[in-house]
Image (cartoon, rainbow, N blue to C red; front, side, top):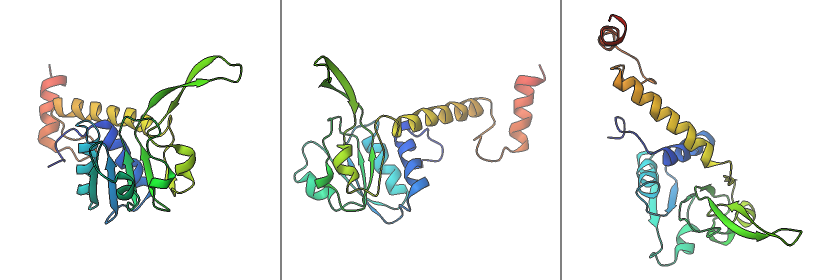
Length: 182
């Protein structure tokens, strides 16, 4: 089902980070957040990878207890530093999708802001075996996956199929007729 569709960039980037660093098959995963752009597609991608997936959200009771049982926690809640180390199982893998600007008072007393994720990085990193930073974790993967989807779209538009797969000779002939032989 997912092979022909364009996969949303942030969930795809998160999945690629996971697959590159952890054996996720048969793991218990919790996705914190149920948005159409991250939470729902992320849960589907994890199911496709044979994870047992639980989706929690603002109306879920005992979110902390549910997260504490997970091997993998993907957080896309839109709440600054919502998930802390107490919510996590020892050795959990944490993907922090959130990006929030919060006010801070600088050393000189002036007001400013800083970027934080949906996970309290300092406390969570004491429990997690792996954790993505914010900024610099999922964001660059989102951009890379946007480029991947763009190239795939261009290939498909040109009749070449998927750039990561093999291109059959009929597709090559159609491309030559449409773009080169004119």
